[in-house]
Amino acid sequence: MAAIPFIWAAALLPAVLLLVYILKKDKNPEPTGQLVKAMLLGVATCIPAALIEMAISWIFFGDSEGGSSLIGNIFDAFFVAAIPEECLKLLALWLVLRKNPYFNEHFDGIVYSVCVGLGFATAENVLYLFDNMSDWASVAIGRAIFSVPGHYAFAVLMGYYYARYSFVESSTKNLICILAVPVLAHGIYDAIVMNIGINEYLILPIFALLIFFCVMMHKKCKKKILAQLQMDGTA
Image (cartoon, helix red, strand yellow):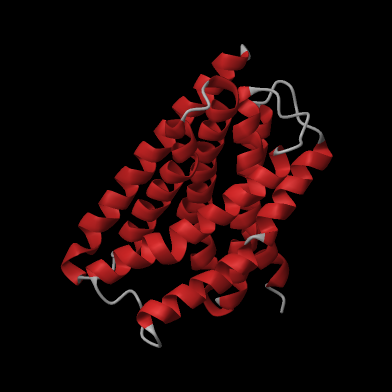
């Protein structure tokens, strides 16, 4: 019981740091109420996402574990995790922005999307850590390095294309990219993670691939952030 405050801190801190990072880049800050709304909607998507994922997993894998083969893991990564989660996050983002008069700059799309994504990541982090209380510290470290920054990156990509569709070009391509790009990034990330233990001889190469993919994804996100700030003339 004495560890509970530390578990809460470990669950919340990664998202708080990333949120502070992105908000500091916004030269024209959004109303606090709108940001809180976005985060709470992100939190609210976590439970339905878990229920949908359990249902899909049961339909396709039954009582057995989905992650027992390379193909099973890839299916699990995209159809059980990435697609349901990113669809629900996009729904939450749409609910925040559809009648939001403060959504008037390119970078706003990233700001609100990151709030939704980090809200989801925080709720997921709390569930994971309290579900693994006997080993919470190692779980917290792994999720702080990979999982929470992963959700942040997926959110940056979603917000970037949402703003491009809203302010630059309302094309079919940009509309598709709003969901397709974060789903692709999320699915690839999860597929790599889920396959780390598929073969003992491949653990190190797959882990190296995970590091490479995460580095490249976050570099891409930095470019997207800079591009939006330049569009607003605030870079």
